[in-house]
Image (cartoon, helix red, strand yellow):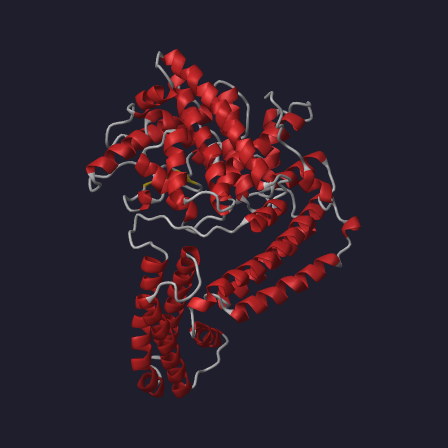
Length: 564
């Protein structure tokens, strides 16, 4: 007899509690911030910066005047988190302004173009003749500097990284200017008469000059070239402080080396059980155990069901019936796999596997990199109990806290489950253990290459070599991983957040579940229902600590001693 289907409607006890007062305050801040960004959407706009600076300064003053002593625990937590977010926004404005000023010598006349774009967003109608003069003047300034740089790339003191940043800024301004011109052209006869020719030649100049900056000064003519923009030690320290991580970049690199060494010992044990001479030989065997072309989607469903059944059997976390199947599956395009050679997840799951249009060598690397044992460790990370379960809860409990989302919570949670499942024997064979250890090694290596790069100690090519040498990546997959890390779509601390956040959750588990304060299910459900936030503040919430205390961010969650 088939089992009765699980109910799709939640039990009354699972319904969210009535919202507390600060939830509406956070929602108002988030909505107002969205409104400002909706209007002030130009690249490097000083009006946008001024508006956002005034907005956050006023909110800082507003929050300082609220009586937190009269608030309940959840309201005090939201107050502390929102105050912290406002401070982060103000720091980021200062940081972005410094980055713009570093690139400004390479961008003569561009500030005037930004002024044209920002004026439109304030509904200020342009004078056609004055606009034409501005377009022509900016074009001449850019063309003059381009000519100088073509003759002597060292005519302006700069670096390849700043040149690459300037090219990106220029491309953003070009897009903004196209929207500005399109808005007026064809609707205002005088505007078109005066600006059509100056705009068209300026647009060509912007394209040509951006190409010069990117290809010659930055050295990124080859699309396979990986260029990043390191932020430096001070910005790293500020980011870590904001996340409640009380360690320096150098200490975190030492942490990563310790974790990588532990993974290596475990890999050697698994290799010996397989009868392989060493971990590299064992890894080669594992890589060759991949599904046939076309079979990967079936494997994803099988592995997802396996993980859910294991969680149910061990009473680890509540997985609502709807969450078990309210996700869709999409295949990653060959183009997207240049940056994401493995699974991605969240509301849905995106599957990486070779397509028939890919070059033969890249097909083989994609097959090997998405073998059964690697995938077994990835599916639960991306779906349940990882990102999909997070998404399910985030949209139903404390949704206002999505403002406080951080990769240390999002990625840290998913990696924490890799720790737990490994420790509790989810990996049934040495091959499965190698699959899980491969990814764990990868997370440790991410700390090394990400911090090494942003400290100016490691190039992107050296990061690729690290992944191939120390983790065992396929070269093409390693390049894709590094490209994704430095392309600008992820924050500078994103790649370290996997393992660091996972270690935070593991330490918190020891402190709460290990001490008998909560059961496994209660611990995990409470975290999910609390919503995203830095893990140090998750700890404050679970232990009843004052969320505004500086001690929250001083939590030492890692043992650097010799024993594990």
